[in-house]
Amino acid sequence: MLKKLFFTTFLVLFTLISAHLLIETSAQVEEPIVVNIDTLGLAFIQINGTFIGSEYLQCIGEPLYIYSFYPSDLVTYLDLESKTILLMATSDQPVNYNLTYVSLVAKPVDTNSWVSQLYVPTTTLFILPEGSVVKQVNPPPRETYKIGNKIAILVNPGNITISYVLPSAQPPPVTSPAVTGTQTQATTMSTSTPTTSPFTITTAQPATPKTTYIAIVLVIVALAIAVYYLVSRKRTSKGISDIEAYLDDRDRAIINYLKEKGSATPTELMEATGIPKSAFYRRISRLEKLGIIEIVDLGMKKIYRLKEKPS
Image 1 (cartoon, helix red, strand yellow):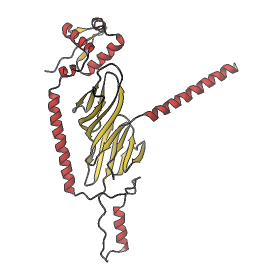
Image 2: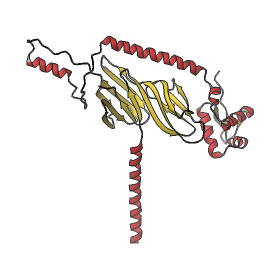
Image 3: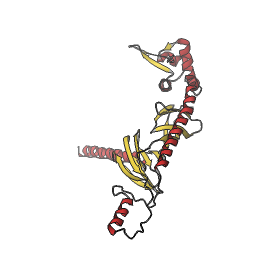
Image 4: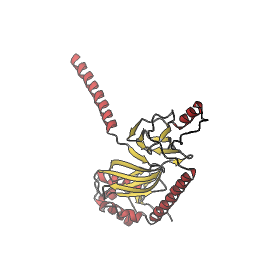
């Protein structure tokens, strides 16, 4: 009896410790999305991950274009309206990928203050422009540190607001003999790093006239409009037929059978195409997400058919 109790207690403790170590290990290897913001509020956003078949990525900010991706045979499709990126593999094997896209993530509030109000779908690391001073992060971040001369802020998934300042240069020293000690002290305090910031800016940034910020905003708007126009023209020519070009023989077998028969049950499709059950439902799910087929529930059974194109 004592041996049995001892063994049970040991097994429970071993399970709890193993689970704890597994959770810690998972947390340590978690790789966040990296959002590297420049002085114009644009960011190169880097994502690494693994998927099978296809996957939709929720973009951060206002996406402009896909900058790079790996592997080279990965199919990518940016939807500006839904702010999503569709990834499609050319095989049924797991794909380890990395992808970088450009997005507008921060906007100027006044001459030297910027704010970033975003939704992040997973753990995300924001890297602010060099020389930035953090004013507020809401909700509070998981961790804040420095990478070189840049501030890095690690946040949890959800809505996040980050406001920061790109400080102006120090004013020239006052040489007039009429300046008192009190006035000199006030000048020094007004140009020092804000006390609310946990960071120290060691190098001053050159002063930026207000007209320069207006020009920067106009350039950003013009760039966003130009990119949106170019990508929109490409999107208007893309349809189901364009996506079908990236599907394999099994996907086309499902589509061709439904074109011929109009509709079919899962069993009919599996028998007609010879696709194993384990792979069949994964393909059906992908084709449904791509908007090629739809599932109709008839109560006692379900049938699949090609989705009608809007007129």
